[in-house]
Amino acid sequence: MELAVPSRPAASAPAAPAAAPAAQRVDLYTPIHKALRAFMSATLHDIGRMDAADDAEVAAALAQTRSLLEICQGHLEKENAFVHTAMDARRPGWAAHTAAEHIGHEQSLRELAVAVDAVAAATGAARAAAALKLYRHLALFVAENFEHMHSEETAGNALLWATHTDAELLAIHGALLASIKPQEMAVALRWMIPALNHAERVAMLRGMRHDAPAPVFQSVLRIAREHLAPRDWEKLTAALA
Ligand SMILES: [Fe+2]
Image (cartoon, rainbow, N blue to C red; front, side):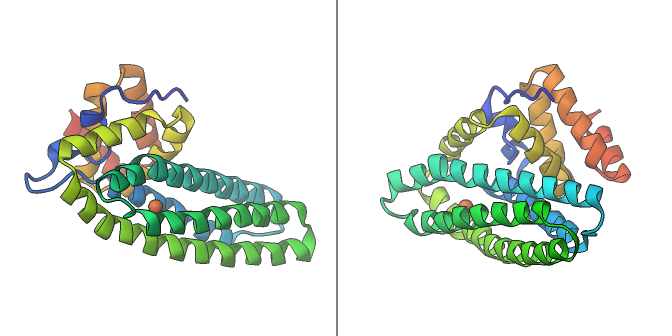
């Protein structure tokens, strides 16, 4: 899938500030966190219901889990590099707590990767036991991340809004987006587009249509059509017409 990073941050930002109410500030966190919550929830569900005796089902569930772990690793690296840097530049030391939580997440991601490999390598009853171990570990990781993301969206945003203008936040977001590889962007959009509400989805795609090359926007539309419920897809196409 060819998905170049949108060229101009303001209109291509998933936070879609152009369509937001006047009083609403640029939100760097919530759109990608909606995607991560959906991806984490779906994957936890899939690992929990996985038939450990079904090789194809196991392979698909483990591949999805590995993709989730990659996205989570990339996400925390982007927050470290772009968001925490901006926070600390205006309030030195402020990001230390959330950065420390990221270190814990990286340890969990390494342990989860080992747990995934253990399921893949096991057979028979041992595979079922390894799958349950992975499920429980993943559940705790999801629980911790849900609390962490809430803190970022409330306390983190409050700090960013007190110390940065919307133009500055859009510049940070643009730099962050430009650092995302096309394949990583495609996975993020696959989960973000269905996870956003209709207004957010329309605003984001309008921004992309305005900024991104036509083939890139067509790739995004294909992701939307593949993963949206039929009613949501109809509403989206009507709004974009
Ligand atoms: Fe974070």
